[in-house]
Length: 419
Ligand code: ADE
Image (cartoon, rainbow, N blue to C red):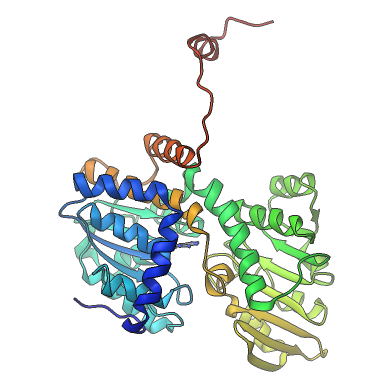
């Protein structure tokens, strides 16, 4: 078996982490049991380009239990949990190509290894695997019967491919499922972003001006948690509706130019490029902490920061680089602008990944069942998958909800009854 992980000796610790996460992933565990009996993915070759975490390990175990021949590669150079990657190889016999801190060349070599598996099904978190296959591996286009995408940035890229007419196989936008983004993007990113910033800096959130760029589901989640810890939250937006929403949620809303001068902690969660630029850095206070929790490391203009820095001290503590500007003020950049929640912390907690990855697993089965019937388009997750995942999650939480009575059902489908 070919693989590339940091050190197989780390596997013991990794295995414990995988088992610990599994305790909080009851829906995925149930699906795994069912998959092991039915083998709905039998004969499928799968390549998954995901953050290599304990939660992802439990997804990979589930796909393997379903009969798939799975290979994993990293979807980000800094998010890999090396001990987990080693355990997947040693204990679960799942090939992994991922090493935390790998450079760009190795990152793409690892994607190449996942491509060499010749998958029928792929999974992506950011669309790097699919875009590599679309651009460089025409020979695989015919054989891929479906591809799942986990994140907002990936769905945006894939929709752009569809618009440009270059998509060659069906994509399912797992990110857009309610069972994914309403929980993972909001509560997962919310908590894990706070976690990453605190682990990297040990900063006290209470009383700080925390500037949040972007008020999508991730930005909202982080704003909610920062506010709950006593921060004065400032939101910057380009979308007027989201800006009003932030204002009515009780956040201060202003331009980044204005916020730059008063922020203590900055975090970007927009999916866009150069959201914090050199002009903003020049206005910042001494000691400003700057992080990103969006998918790619482009949201903070790091080349721009490097140009205006008089002095750079790398790694003044783990995940913290100090940039001193010509005006003498210091900026603390976290994790080289890579997603802080997965670089400095452990990503979203297992109990929220449970829903995302249960949605992934059932959507994979849907692709297999519908092979040949789907077109080269970006599809939503089917409603029955969302219903199953949400019903199972609720049951696992011990929560019972009401059911519509026949009278209520009739009322909701009629228009004749008024005042
Ligand atoms: N994305 C965010 N958090 C994650 C986690 N814990 N595992 C995999 N992907 C993630």
